[in-house]
Image 1 (cartoon, rainbow, N blue to C red):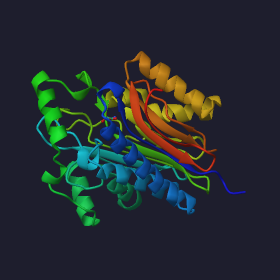
Image 2: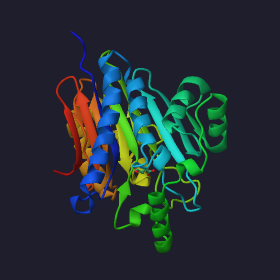
Image 3: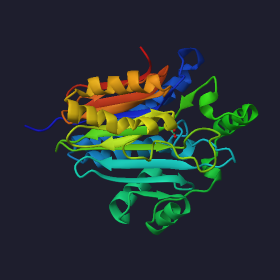
Image 4: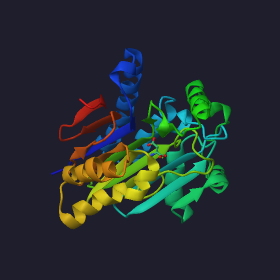
Amino acid sequence: MAHNFGIAVHGGAGTILRSTMTPEKQAQYEGALRAATDAGYHILAAGGSSLDAVAAAVTVLEDFPLFNAGRGSVFNNIGKHEMDASVMWGKTLEAGAVCGIANVKNPVQLARVVMERSGHVLLCGHGAEEFARMQGLAMETDEWFYTQQRYDQWQEALKEDAVQLDHTEKKFGTVGAVALDASGHLAAATSTGGMTNKKYGRVGDSPIPGAGTYANDATCAISCTGHGELFIRSVVAHDISCLMEYKGLSLKEACHIVVQDKLVRIGGEGGLVAIDHAGNIDMPFNSEGMYRACRSSNGYNSVMIYRD
Ligand code: ASP
C-alpha cells in the first residue's frame, strides 16, 4: 500500500484580526496559501520528494510580496533586507541554511544548494551571496525587494524605536512548509526577512536547524514562525521531535506542550506547522492568528487565518 503523503504551509503568525482585514486582502492571502500548498501537493501526488515539495511551496510564498520572505522581506534598522532560510531532509538529517543575505531571489533555494553542494550547513552574508552567484541562482536588485508597505512599517517602527514585536500590530510574516512524501520521507523549509527594524546582523530562529526548522523521518517535520529569540532559546522544533522520540507522545501532544505551555511561559509568541511520519498534521499557534494551509492524501484540506 502506498504511504500517506501531505503538506502544510504557513505564512506567519501574529496579531491577525478579522477587524483589520479587508475581504480583498483576505482573498489574496488565501489564494497565495492555496497556490503554495497545491504546488507542493502536486509534486507529492506525482511521487516526488518531500524536499522538492517544501522547496516549491516556500518558493511560491517568497515570490508573493504579501509575506515577509523573499520579495516581501522587511527592513532592518539600517533600511536593508537581510534574509534567513533553511531546509532539512528527514531521511538523512541533512540540513542547509543561509542567514543575513541580500539580493538572492529565493533564499530557500540557496539553503537547499548549501545542503546539497557546499559541504556545510550554514552560510552567512556575503559568502552565502557569492556562493549563490557561483551556483547560478537568480539574483535581484535592492529595488526589486522594496515594497511600500514594508517601508512604511519600518518608518513606524523607527518612530517608536521598536522592533516589530513591540508593535500593537504584531506580525511575523515568515513562510514555511513541511511535507511527507509517498516514500515516507519528511522535509521542512522556512524562509524569512526576520523582524522589522531588527538590528543589522541579527539572525532569528528560521535558519537554525532544531530551532525554527527540523525534520527527522523517525518523528516529524516542523517549520516555525514567531518571536525568533524565544524560539531559539526554546529549541522549539527539535523539542517537539524529542518529546515524540523519547517520551512517545503524539505529534499533537508534543506540539501542545511546546507551543501552548513552554513557549507561553517565557513569552514566546508564534506558532508552527507540523507533520508526522504517518501524515498527521498539526498547525498550533499561541498568537491571535496564523496564515496556514494544508492538504494530504488522508483527507486534510484547508486554508485558515484566524483562531476559529
Ligand atoms: N521567526 C522569525 C524571526 O524571528 C520571524 C517570523 O516568524 O516572522 O526571524
